[in-house]
Image (cartoon, rainbow, N blue to C red; front, top):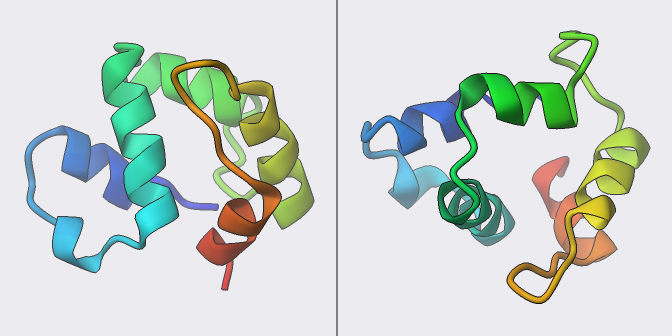
Length: 81
């Protein structure tokens, strides 16, 4: 998965109108946990491949579920549709 649009949104470049709801949810998580580009990339894509399979992405996102953030497998799948 390429996450450049998400990073641009976090930098203040308004793309929110074009981002699907699950991606907005991830953007809010990144903002609330104060991830920067490097820390987010290290978490989601430690090998810097910039191309995750849906299963790999879902596994990573499921590890982020906590009291302040919940994402479902269905929401993760929406990102790849």
